[in-house]
Amino acid sequence: MEINKVALVGFGAIGCIYAKGLINGCNDFAVVAGGTRGERIKTNGVKVNNTLVLPRVVNPENEDWKADLIIFTVKNYQLAQAIEDVRNLINNETILLPLLNGVTATDELKAAYPNNTVLYGIALGIDAVRTDDGITNSSDGIIQFGNAKNAPVTPDVSAVKDVFDKSGIESEICEDMLRTIWRKWMINVSTNQLSAIIGCGYGWFLKVPHINEAMHQVMLEVVELAQKKGINLTKEDAFEYDKLLPSFNPDGKTSMAQDVEAKRKTEVDYFSGIAIKYGKELGVETPWNNMMNLIIKGIEATY
Image (cartoon, rainbow, N blue to C red):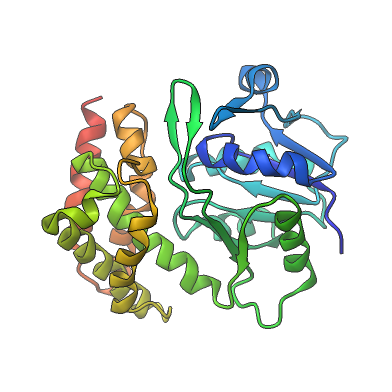
C-alpha cells in the first residue's frame, strides 16, 4: 500500500511544524482551508523557527482531489467543522489520523466516517509557542499512532509510517494505543490546565514542589478513571512524566496557557470536562478536575 496524497487540517502551531516536513516528504501535500483563511495561508504561509512554510491549499469545496491520508491537528472544539471540511476530499480508502489532545477524537471521526480506517494518534513532546514572527519550538516531539492494538502492524499503519519517515517526522507505532492516548491525556489534563491557571512554563512543574504535587494529584484522578475503563495506566505513569519534563524548554508554555494569555477559547471541556463526565459515569470522584473546570471557565468568562 502506498500513500501519495496527504492533507492536513489545522494549520496552527502543531500543524505548521508537521507541514514543514510533509511538504518535502510527500508527493502531493496540501493544507485544507477555505475562505480568507485559505487565501492567507496560500499567500503568506507561516514562519517556523524563521523558516517560511508555504503549503499548497485545497478548498473544502474542491471535489476533484481525494486524499489517501488526512491528518487532523485542530483543536477539539474545531473537530466537528473539520469533519465537514474534509467530506469532499474523502473516498472509502482514505485513512484518517487525528493528532488532537484528548481521548474522544477517534470515536467522533469513526461515527462520521464508519467506512474509513480511523487511527488513534497523538503528538507528544512538542513545545511550540506562537510569537509575532510565527512559530518557535525547540522540540518537534514524536507522533505515536496506530490502531487500538498493533500486533501485528497492518499495511495501512505501515504506509502512514512511511509517510512520516520520508518527511523526517519522528513517529512510533505503539502496541497499545489506548494506553498511549490516555497517558498523553493524563499529562494534558494536568499540565495544560494547571499552567493555564498559574501562567507558568514547563520548568515550574519540577522547580516548585507545590505545582509538582498538584500536577500529580490531577494525574492520579485520570489513572483511576483509566483503570475503571480497563485501560492499562498506572500510578507509576504519573510520576514517570517528571523524567520527560527536563527535555522541554523551561520557559515554554502549554497550548492552553497560550490560549488563556491570548484570550482564546480553551479545550477545558475536553480535559476536565471529559474527566468529570467519566467520573460521574464510573463512580470516581474528581475534585481536582471539578475545581480546575470552574476556574478555567471563570477565566474565560473574564475575557
